[in-house]
Length: 392
Length: 76
Image (cartoon, rainbow over all chains, first blue to last red; front, side):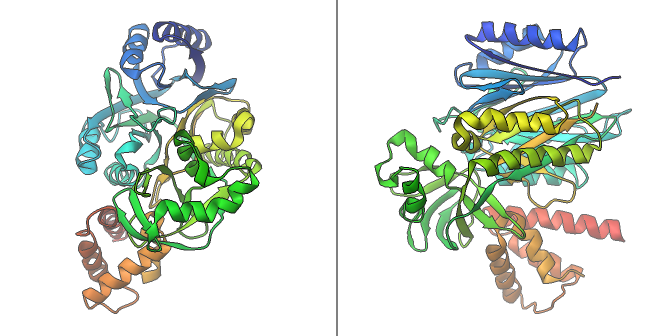
C-alpha cells in the first residue's frame, strides 16, 4: 500500500482549529484513513480540549499529542497554533501512557511499555516514539529506561513537550488521556524501517567547568560558585556583542538566554548538549534532565547558519537510513533553534523538506529531543533537530 | 573482555567523559579491581556497584549493564 503523509497547521479556537486540521488532512489523504496522527498544540489550544475535538473527527485513529513552544509544517511556522501529522499506509501502532514520571521514571516507563507489544504479525519493522514532560526533569532517565525495555535493535525518536516558554506545565497525550508529569510511549510497526536523524549546531564557548553541587536536574554550584553567577560571567562577552546584558534580563528573558547558552558534555567526538530551562532565586539552574554532580561541562554558543546546516544534516541522516526519498517526516526541533533563528526559522524547516525531496514535514519546538539509533548508549538530546522519516 | 576505555565511552554518552572516567575509576578502586581490560565478571561487579548510586549515574549504569549482558549473550 502506498504511504500517504498529510500535514496541517491551524490557529484559532479549539473547535475551529480541529475542524480546519481534519479537513486539511482528509483532503491530502484523498479518503485514506490514517494509521495514526501526531498532534502538536500550543498552550492556546489546550490538549484536554483539543484531543477529544480531534478524536471525534478522526474516529478510530490513534492520536499522540504534546504541548509545544511553536508549531510548523513544510508550509510555515507559527506560535499559538496546532500542527497535525497523519500517516496512511502499511503501518500499525500501539501506544501506552503513564504519569508519575518525576517520582519514579522507571515505573512510569514500565507502565507505558506494558501496553506496547514487541511485535505485530505482518510488520517486520518497528520504531518507537517517546513523548514526555521535560519539567519532570527525567528526560535522559526515561529515554534510557525506554531503550532498555524496547531492546537494542529498536530506533527511538521523540520530543519533550513545551509550553510557549512559560516553564509552568508541559503536557503529553494519548487519545483521551492528557497529563503533565507523564509520558507516551508508542511503537510504530511497518513493512520497511523508518529513518531517524539527529544533529546540533552548537560549539563550546567556555573552557571546562565542573558541576560541584547538583541534585537531580538542578545544578546549584559550578566550580564552587552559584551556577547562574558562572553562567552570566562566562557568557557576558558573547551576549554583549549581541547587545544583551545577563545582569539586566527581565524575568521572561532568562529562559531564552539560557537556551542560547546551553551546556555541553564531552562524550567523545562531539558535545552532548544539555538544556538549562530556568534559574531559581538562589542562583541554581534547572535542566531538562539529570546532571550528575562531578560532571564537567562547557557552556556553548552557536551561529544561525550552523543551526540551518545542522537541521539539513539531521534530515540527510534520516534519509540515508531509509535509503530512499521519504514520504514525509516528523520533526522534533529544540525551541532554542527558533530563538536563535528568529525570522529565519522557516528556512531551516524548508531545508529539511528539501533534503527529503520536498516531502511533507510537521513538527514542534521542544524542550528536549529524543533520538536513539540501534546500539546507541544515550538518546536524550537538547538543542538538536530530530527527524523521523517515513518510507514511501 | 572489555577495555576500561570502552566502558568509559559507554557511560560517557550520558554522563560526559570526565564524570564517566571518575566514577569508573573510583568504583573499581573501591572494589579492588585493577584490571584493564575487564572481564565480564569484573564489568558486572563494577556496574552493579555503580547502579546503587542514586540519580542519573545509577540509571546509566543499569542501562549499560543491560546492553553489556545483551551483547555478551549475543556473542556467546
